[in-house]
Image 1 (cartoon, rainbow, N blue to C red):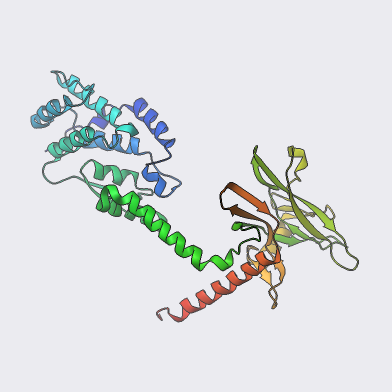
Image 2: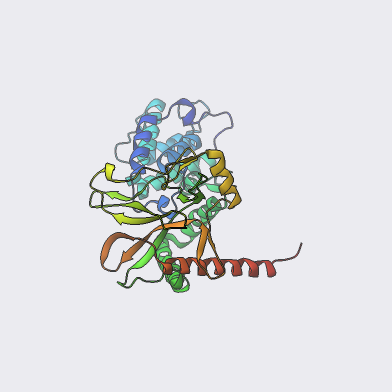
Length: 377
């Protein structure tokens, strides 16, 4: 085993340029990578995690306290790895180990049997029969504990975020338990959950007359214009673009309807703009809202006050008959069509608001039932 005072490779040198290059290349990997389980916002590259762990777990051959057993086994095993020449001196062995670490950071070699076997064997020689314990109390996406398991270590990982804890459980427990079949089993389970969700939520996403299925509802919070003789509803929209792809450019534009004895009302339509100038400018900037009907700008403090009165304004308000009377406003509906790639957009209809009203009622019933079944304090 490594003596306590023996230096580790990370204390004397580290192939940071090569490891960084592999880490950048790994970030471009789209398929077959563990990060595909969930796009965690602060995931560390596996390349750098693997390299740093090896540099911390292996002793420096040039240190007088480095065990001879480790140096002898390292020379024997590194001869099995292409391009790693352990030579005859301790300096040669150090450079060979650092080269191994740099090469193993390559994502293409992450599951290479030779590299994995050599790594685990040298970790075992360095630390004895009992595997070293790698502890990561804020593991996030699990890159460090995952690589620790790959190198033959014991790993303890935790996090304050429940989403991170779920990722860690799947990554560190379910994945190793199911082995190579894990991806197929996960796909099958995901498909089953999707079918169940589609069956249970079908009435909340009613099909269009042409067979298209609503995929998403796009909403905007609203406030009331406080200018004299106006009172129009102002939808808070940061961008009127729906899709800016060159092959499918879609945006919203509006017209203001003024009926005698009624407040001005804004109606939206979807069109295909030919340039940026065709698309209306945003209605909210730095919390200030500009009325579409009269052009008056509502101060930020009044916008915040109105939204606070709406408890944030993210929910639509219905009357007793299920008609919308305020709150969030639906701007557009995104649909999918069978046999047609890409997303399509249409203006909302009463059926869409009816589905939203049904969803709100169902959510209220679910919350009430959960209160009834909760354990009293």
